[in-house]
Amino acid sequence: MSRIIDRTAYYARDYSLPDLTLVIQNPAAVSALLWSRYRERVISGNPGSDPNSLVGRTPHCRMSNLTKLCRELYYGDTPRAMRARFLFLVFDVLVVSYFVATTFLELQTWIIIVDMAIGVILTVELAGRLLADSDRGAFLTKPMTVLDFIVIASLFVPALIGNFAFLRLVRSLRLLRSYTVARKLRSQSRFFARNEEVIFSVLNLLIFIFIVTAAVFVLQVKVNSSINNYVDALYFTITTLTTTGFGDVTLVGSAGRLLAVVIMIVGVALFIRLVQTIFRPNRIHYECPDCGLTRHELDAVHCKHCGRQLHIRTDGLVD
Image: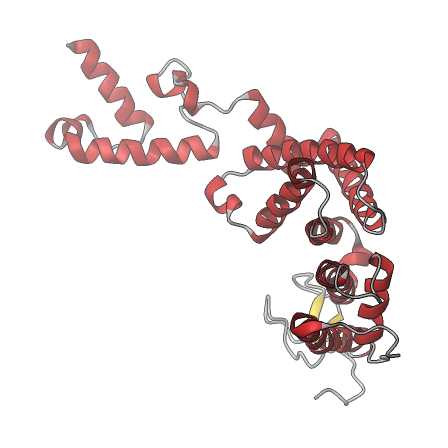
């Protein structure tokens, strides 16, 4: 009996409970409090201060070596972590370059093999980021995580379904991986951080072009004699997007005409947005002397982070 009381008193001390009297008088409330603090320590990676305690000995409470390694590689400041993140970034750039290059190629056996190999690597990388994140539920609902799931699924679809025309559209979705790469580059490169708006505007336009081109190819390749391959679909998309409209290639059917309308409306809007971010950006690079914030509105008078008065030079033409 004394051993049980000693152990209960240890839990009370280890979890900062007021005293043993509270444990005896209201065990249900104390149990709920212990469980709450137990979960907090599991998430923080410090399940128990005493490794000999019941909490400290529970396998589910201790971070595994794999989890520790993932957290170091993705969030640590060690030389090994910095090298690992640089290699991840190089791999991401190579993968996106491969996606762009294979967009123009017909589906072949070697492409399926390479796709599945990349899919396995991206799955392992996604699992590593999941282990490294302290709030895994929130991580799974992040937009970038959802995009990664879509990209990974598109890498395995050709091997499961076969060579159909609509796989062009599925394969183009892999370019959504570009957003993940751009986000990483933004945190690693001052050039990308300084030109973030322009880069994302270019990225939005390029991804729109590739996805719409794939949609044009899927809908028209068997019903339109003017569109026989992916390049024909790309040619139509570009001429429609730029409002050139030579007229030598047109879409047939109601679905084709509706798609042309979408290309003209959305595409022109994205193109105008790109021009605006290049010549009339919404933000300017100006470092606040106090807090170091480097991105401010063109007509900002005070820093929105610390409130310091700014002296941003303008030409007086800001709307």
